[in-house]
Amino acid sequence: MINKRLLIKSLLAHNDENSFYDKKRQLNLRQREGKAKFLKHICALSNSNPKNNSYIVVGVDDSDNSIRGVDFFDDAKLQNLINAYLENPPLVLYENIHFPHLAEGKVVGLVTIRPTNKITALRKNIWKYYGGAVFFRDGSVSVSKVFDIELQDTNAEVVAEIEKHAQNNIELTLDGVVDFMNRHDSVLKPGYKVFKESFVLCWAGLEKKVKGMTYYSRVDIELINEHVKLFYSAHDEVEIEMDAHSFSLIEYVRLGFNSAFKYYPLERVSFLFDNKGSYQIDSEFLFTPPKYEKTLLHHIYNDSNALGEKLLKNLSLTKNDKEDVGNLAPTYMLCYLNGFEGALDKLNELTAGIKRHGEQAYQSLKDTQRILRKIKYH
Image 1 (spheres, rainbow, N blue to C red):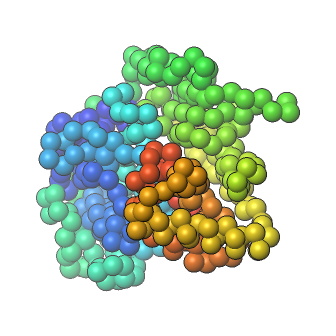
Image 2: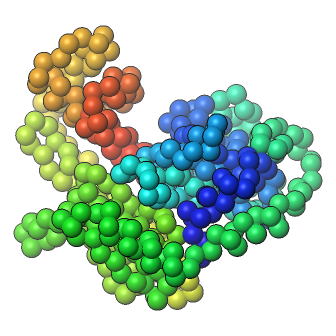
Image 3: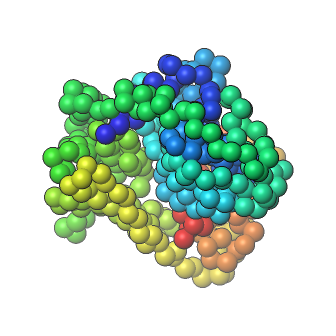
């Protein structure tokens, strides 16, 4: 079993960007240009490594290799993007890797591209890249080359050696459990469970009991063997279930207007462990958006637009305005889900303005964007 934190350290310490490894300060998958560049690198790394894994490390400063981290990213449907735009798409896995010195909620993203031994090409146009284009790695650069070029197996041995030195051991596992317990306050009740005598999973969360049911907020879940953060949420409520073979959670999101808020189930995620030393992640989308009376929504939508104009023009805000900014993103989302098609464009237009108004408003924006991504994929 590979310790992903060790793997990232090995890639950063022993290799500059090359034909099997790339690093990014961050990914921008919300914009068409960002998606296109990401797909280009996936295509190039896949074609340049037909017999071995290749990697992209996200959250690293390009100038000095310092680990800065990025927000936790749980887009399990990233493979859908790969499959939609690439011919002979590789299997791509995005994992969130914990590093002790990073701030809470920050991780390093590790993108693993599995070998296909087939030529991967763009299936259709995106941004300035044309359908049918084929990319390869030329040192640290992804470049377009002719389609009939032969796949070269040049990196298998060196990548195998790097992965060999990143294997997990008992000491690293024990250190990981101790680190997890120490960095979570006792009020979060950190705990661990061993599955199939191989996997050690740690979790922590603020416990709350409602009508005989137990829910958690500020939830952090990590697979210690690989130092992979499986789930992280600063706000949403989570229900946890487990048995000898699996660990499951149901995530709820708090939505509503004014003082009328309710929790709605968003997604069930299950981690299934087997006796062969492997595990898989299953997800089930549960979200049904709440419905509201149109007259009420027109009033709320117009008020939101008025507040949005103040943000765009950088006008002074009242105390109530500042509080409303924190709920502006989910308000536009609920309007959009109830038939106000222009609400999504308004939200995108106001993204920069919302970010400027503090961590709470920014966190609400990020949570809303994550929910919208999940809705789009399902």
